[in-house]
View 1 (cartoon, rainbow, N blue to C red):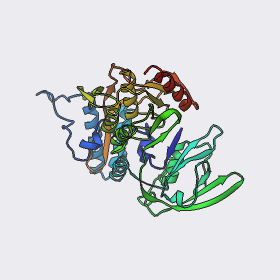
View 2 (view 1 turned 180 degrees about the vertical axis):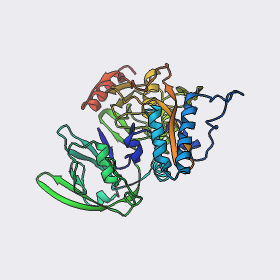
View 3 (view 1 turned 90 degrees about the vertical axis):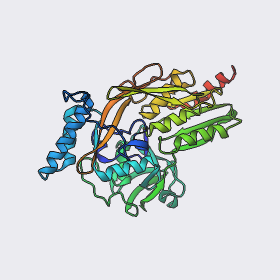
View 4 (view 1 turned 30 degrees about the horizontal axis):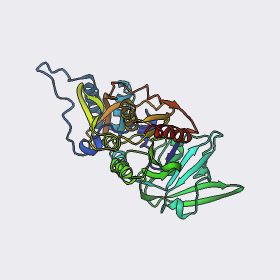
Length: 397
């Protein structure tokens, strides 16, 4: 499992089901503009709610309004209502947290520019340092060990907790303040490189994400790594494919991709599909479909790498490529987050995001709670297995 100081989700998501990212083009089109249908619209003159999801939304909104009228916390009341509803992926954001979340999906974050992973022995290893970041300016390198953050030991802690410490978010039920994760605030890191140990104090900064990276392997194979589907990432995938005119095949690395904007995942699918169905989904019982644009590279061999950290929009893309016979999927079973969340504003400006439906792959498979099973199991050797697969596929071209 790996992570970076970008995708520590706002604290209320971590407390609950964790790592929920908005489905479909919710943040791209609807959430920020209020352009969704009224979730409390009635079907007929009986006044019955349109659906159980809509009823849950109404319950949460009413709980928040009552708390606000009584001088209590609307957010806490809404959280309790979500918990009672049994909505596994339901979450409530304060207004500030929601704005932070949208900024992250727009490709910006506040942090120090580190990627890290938890090793088998419980140590936390820095796997990448973003160019131009505070961490890079301090000389921190990939392969260094992260020992502590602000005096707290990180060995054995989930990467999500480590990321939260780097970001300055509260964890373990502690309350955070607006200043905790602000650009310019200090964070002290305990580091180790070989036998050398030292402390480094950095100032957090506003950074742009680097969610799509491209590299090359032997035999003309191009690797496209997508860490999250933030704004613009789909076009970056398409551009990478178009620019790799001499590539003999592609590896689409979705390991650790916790999802993001599904509109971007659909755009990415258009890089490898010549149009056609990507997924179907329902919102309050209404069936809808997502389609790729025509003109993608549908011929050169493709392997998609996945693992237990591959979630949501990344699973949707994987399922489309697998079902349509476009890619061989290599790795381990994906996380299994295939539900649709829709945000709605509460009276105090906070946001409740509740499950309103589920998506399915082109063949009709449900992903939620099941995940996607790869065609070929692989663990640490996944990239090497991908090379082998592509070599074999190339022989039949």
